[in-house]
Image (cartoon, rainbow, N blue to C red; front, side, top):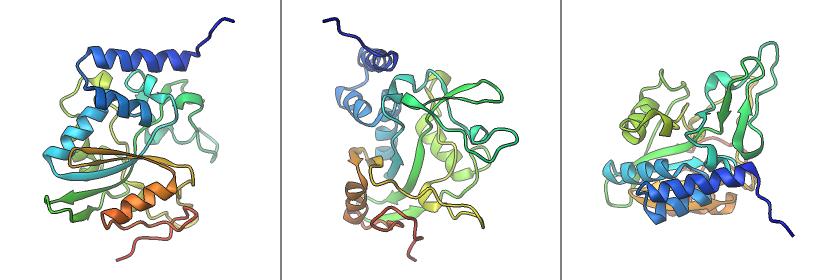
Length: 225
């Protein structure tokens, strides 16, 4: 029986192989395979979180999208809707999307949950990332500079907007909430943790005494304090 592989599976294999050959550490490539965050980006997030004593939690991109991170640009705020429609433009299998108006292809972007500043004592203070898009958001722009500023353009997948935990929806709009099977990745002062499922995500927030603004079902209930 012949073995077959999808285009996405081949892209993932090539991305991880090229990263290993390019000097990315085995632990970083393994974490990239788990989380679908680009391997160069994993290394940058790990190193930047250690250098600046940050704790950062982000939602993982769609499964197998790691093969396309840096090959296509990240989904931007202006990709969210098409002309004449209130229906959101979604990325499809392996995180690839095509905008119906422009035909531009993009890949799942990196969605922040929240960012906290540490001082080496295990106590973290929340940084409000705001709700404005990149380019008009000083906090997000600074995070992009810290983590991606010295990188070649083709390897960048910068954050496009503030963190989901900091989002307060305008009247009539719904919060994205948190899915029961959500996958997140945490970078804490150089340490990495894969958090598959809402129970592990919640437990990680509680471990470091972070404000978890969702109920047991993942519905956004707002920050405490």
